[in-house]
Length: 237
Image (cartoon, rainbow, N blue to C red; front, side, top):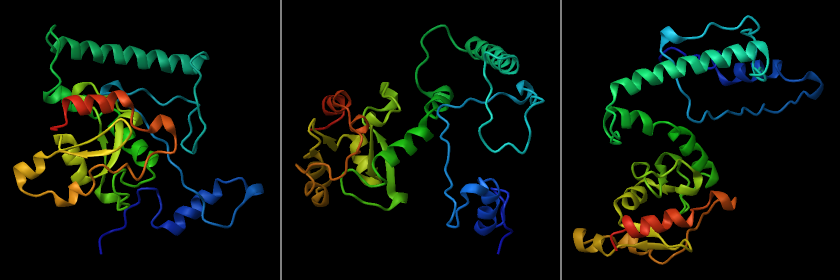
């Protein structure tokens, strides 16, 4: 067996739980397994190493959560001013390397930009759909993918209202325009599958059916303007 990897500073789950319990309020001590949560970072940015900001004197390695800096106070204001200064400097470098003309959304710069917010988008869509495929209800997480209704390359935003959680094959068909959704969330399957591949029986069974799984929160459900775009510009009909 390979060596144990300490990604959380613990060799196994039992030790990790003990470490978490030590940080819990002893007055509200619980015996069952501690709940481990997470924080989603949306659109993080990273400085070059030579721009790294020294750790403030009031920051201690033992801090687990809750430490914040107020930009209206001395220490927080200095940190924020330094961050803004570095971002302006790095932005100037990038702009200086680009043409004054509108930059096409492809190439190395495009690849870097598409990653901004993608991780958060994937997590939020997965959770909004309760980890189940919108079309089939499939629960096997490794084959589920967060799909954009209107692609990022067409200025589609990383918002749950522009997302669907789909089984990987349906995601591919949706992106290629062989499958779409109507405004009332019914599935339409293009006749082009049969014409081009002389197959598609498993997909035509879905034609006309309503999504079996939609987000509980109405604001997370597919937005009509993005569905309309997909119907008009992506679906092969």
